[in-house]
Image 1 (cartoon, helix red, strand yellow):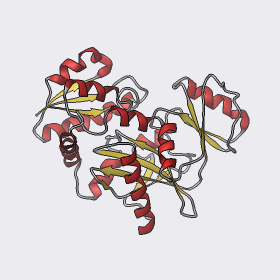
Image 2 (image 1 turned 45 degrees about the horizontal axis):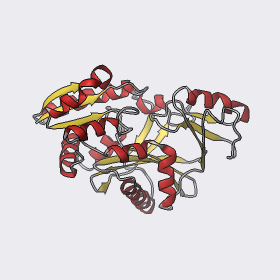
Image 3 (image 1 turned 30 degrees about the horizontal axis):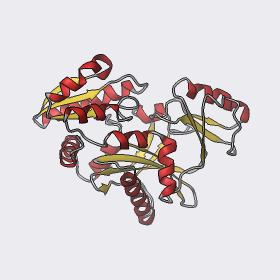
Image 4 (image 1 turned 90 degrees about the vertical axis):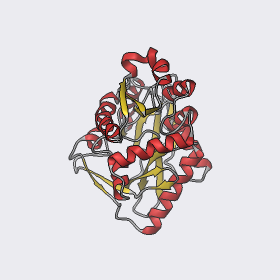
Length: 304
């Protein structure tokens, strides 16, 4: 097939996207596909025309565009199939506050939260007890995120977010261990436990992408009951958000065993250190096999 590999883009996560694209490009060629690289930041005006000449599009974008559903909407217009969620589901999952409403509707625990906008200002009243996380309502890779322990530090954390995004998600701090659960097709993959390096307060950008940034243990050393519970919650969230193909959700688990779903990623990272490829490898799928399966699922679900 003629596959266009869409990566790069203009978000703050551009470098992560390009890093993953290199490995994906190799895998696509190993699968026998004719690959054309396409960067929306350089040639967005030709996306529709390029997509109409392709048999399939493999999207490796993070943030906007890509996770917001814009690229998927253009591909739908072109009649070009692609892996993963469609435009509406992509946008719903990218918006952390909106997706949290979906989790709460399913009775899935998620940390208490509030939205603060520039209209309210950096001195808006805080409805949650400290400490809190402050993060862009739309975005990923922990970019722009702060752990605020003192009230006087909140305005600076909000300023950081407002420089990137029009709204800030302020979220209850849940102490515990972080677990992530990937979905592939209609099955949940093994859980991965994430242990940031000792001097890190949370799983930040450096921890996520540095080769020695964190210990990632797969399968996670937790009970079968907790594993089944988190996998079930993740499958339910995946379906309720309207996602297809694949996704990955991040959970915090307290010492008492309560799991809180933080967010769901519709275009999980595909770098050499990424989590979903690690989980897929544990069930026998090489990176190239994983790319092939995502293409199969994309064609089967017929997003375009």
